[in-house]
Image (tube, rainbow, N blue to C red):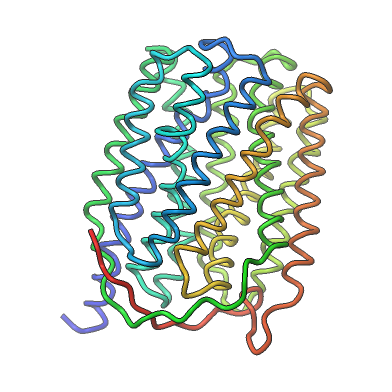
Amino acid sequence: MSPGKSDRYEDRVPFLALFAAVLLLGIADSMVNSYIVLFGADVAGLTPLQIGVWASVFAVGGITIGWWLGRSFDHRPARTYAIGVILSGSAGYLLLPRVSSFLVLLLMAATVLGVSAAAFPQLFALARAVLGEGVAGQRSAPLLRSAWSLAWAGGPLLGALVLSRGGYAWLMWTAAGVFLASALTVLAVPRPGPVVAASPSPGGTPVLLTVSVTLFFTAMFAGGVALPLFVTRALHQQPASVGVLFSVCAAVEVVATLGLAVVPARFSQRAVILGGFGFFVCYHALTVVSSDLLLLVLGQVFRGVGIAIVGAAGIRYFQDLLAPATGRATTLFANASTAGLLVSGILTGLAVEHVGYRTTLLLCGVTAALGGVAFTLGSARPAAGTGGPGSVSVGGHAHSRRGSG
């Protein structure tokens, strides 16, 4: 086998394992999170405010463990971080149907359920570490993000099927099994290999860029809480229609994310990401004027494109900006998104109770627009002496990590 073919083979095997792990993780995540709000309201009897608090506690657990694991990964990369947090989520959702106490739900959200959020950035950091800083490593973010989107295209429908046949208990138990399968799949990913010692990543934390991501995901998560209630309570649609909407959004995400993987390197990543913010604002504008399912579905097309662009191109933007600190960069992006969940939780509950579903969704659109402004300002001045991740592809950064299983 020629060296070129050997390299492609060695890249393909770990990538396929990572793709499968992200796909399974996304299926499990989409199955539960498409209906977790309705579970809290219909099964646990939580008020909108309590649901918001619950969502925020989820975020605290995810941010805390995610920050620690991101630093740990840069110091000593390993597969065990991702495996551990995924198994934690599996155990948590296995137990969740038996819990109705609000205090116990909060405790679980802060521990076994919340920490599973750290699995997503860990898998992306693992991909960059295993595949390297070349073409394969740089394309891993949008391609793996397409696996996540593909999972969200089918996961909510699978969740709706399980929910209609076995109720919320079987929904959570099935998701727990898929989480377990994802953790086992990570074992097929090679251990991160040894490389040259990394120099410190340039600069400090990109504050405005981080704020922009937080605002975007605040709008996304807040809308994710308000939309199911808006659809079922205000528009009187069936709960299963919520799964249809999320699946349409995810299907569009798959196409848009795959499209990002073939965008020429010379094309401005900054312009692409700003376009993503614009699509997301348009989604909210369509949703707040909706009176039936058709317009809601159209809105999900805009939502899918916006999430795909900011979610996939954003991760790569942060990785390139903070290279070679892959763990720190990926976790910073992920924690910025999780901070959006934290902020959105309580605020959404209060907004829904005081101004209603439609106005809450309108406020989400305003928040997304503010995120676009923050990104515009934060990305306006790339580091001196570089083209910046917003304009050209970033060259390889040779660095080494101590491998660990």
